[in-house]
Length: 296
Image (cartoon, rainbow, N blue to C red; front, side, top):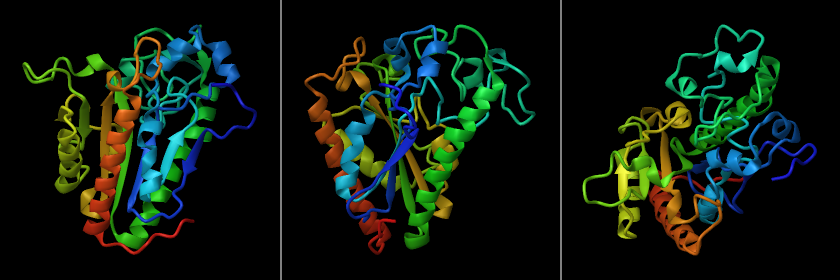
């Protein structure tokens, strides 16, 4: 969690051989906190991490042993949210004028969870006061825009060779997030799959994921309350061979939500995800019948 001089804000973790027509993405698991950001914040790191998808990158990292790379953020979600439009900004947060193209009226901005978040997920204000818009622009230009260019380039590299690609967008959710949508008497929901109601991913791909997780005894819902965010919407176009599926894992399955520590169940959940990755990527290779992808 330390601020390292010139540390990259994100990284690609490549497989030894890129054989699967897929990319895994973890935009909210970063925890390299810039020192300047910590000075601006009124909250300690432990509270800033409440917005983090803790350990999700580790849970899904078996993708590399099954032939697919992972793109993951190193900076925290409380610093910049990479699952938002680049300029989804709350004018109340900044000194200086926002550009005319800024989206200041989205529900996420209204809730304090824009590209530069105003609050952590538990509703506490992050900053001591307003910050200069020039700093927000710098974060967007240095991190958000390059991140999405990298994600798009990875997808295009697969599309050019296979004609299809799957983006798996990896997230976690609070245990309380699905209380209002869980079927009566079913118990808590373990996983929510977001395919934007079928518009971002082919049905057979979503079905493979759902069936695998159900065989492991997990309770799975689709699209409620998470149908997919900016990344799923922006990268999912099945009619063009681009599939995007968001996977939200209930944090209480593998960690203590109060102290953010892994529980004894962490390795089991990691093994379940590894089995999912094995079956899913095997299905994709058969479905798309692609030649081996050379790592570049």
